[in-house]
Length: 474
Image (cartoon, rainbow, N blue to C red; front, side, top):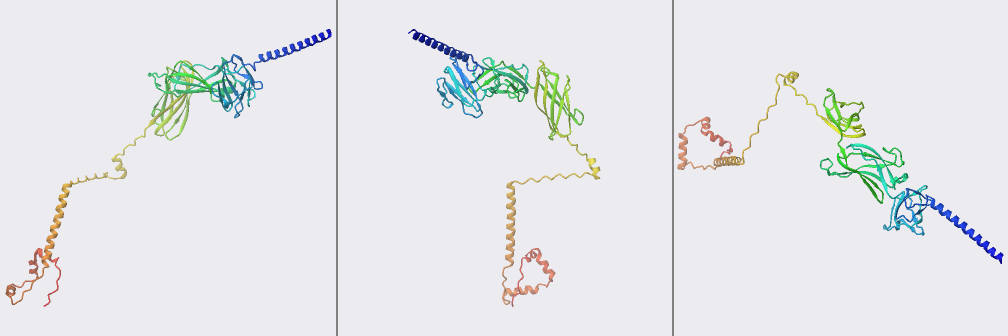
């Protein structure tokens, strides 16, 4: 019996030792798991949590979490598995408690009141990827300088923080967009009154342009201030597919382009025009000014030039005057402001017109001597055209002429008909015939000349219309 009891006691002791050992092992496992920064997110948001077999843990204090999963290009969105084994698919998101944005290379998911415990992401997640829990993203950039010029090309760097900690994960640049906008203060005393908002820079971390190194976590913005001069309010903006953060800085003054250009036609002699370049010396240190420019001639030829000698005097450049027309001058200016800041300035194009020279009028004496002509023949001046008669006078003349023609025609027809009338012959034994014979006998014979004189003018005229008649048959 005692042996049995001892055996039972030993068995109970052995069982108790095994239970204690198992408890210690489980406690050690829990301690290791709790101490692992890889699987625990915690109430204080971490910038990035490396995935352990695509698993991560959400603490019970988290009320809202925004996660970013980076995956292979073009792959399907990931599938989330809750601690209880239920799954969340991108196509089943209702947009109330879960918001999901999928791109070609990442998924951004926002979950309100997530279930505490271990979660799992299933998909073609990139090796070395991590879950990024976003809390308070901010863009940190130096304030814009106090003296800025319209047309200036400016470089500025910035970096991102999440929960006051820098974000050094290079792939995160595909998720956010960093920009700076200028908003007019609508001050009527400046030229930009009523102007639209202007986006002046986009920050990049790709090693191009003015960015010094790609994917180093430092974003570089390249400004081209091709906006009207005036008073502007800068707004720094950080945008993601799900939210936007803005930082508004105090208003700044954008000054007009300080480079002043003029030209003296034939200022360098008969063969050259003189280009004069000066600056607003209240804003720019003249001794530091360097100029790189080009001249486009009216015929399309281009001449490049540079002025690099430091001096306090106005810069001069001679332009060949071999043509007339419009000359165009384009400059890029380098220098320092009066407070010592270096700048690069895109100067607006300057144009000037060279008129075509007037040819001298030829002198009359020289022209006559060259052509050996005693007198210069001048073209006769055209005679003035007679003024036309009015309509009433024209009508009177037409009626008079037509009436005269009709009357004259009637007279001619009457005379012709009278001459063509038939002649009545009288018998010789009649009284009329005897009288006519006596008259003929008493009449002296006259020659042909007397007959012609008797006809007279009218007879000659009528003879032209008289036809020849055959002699009467006896």
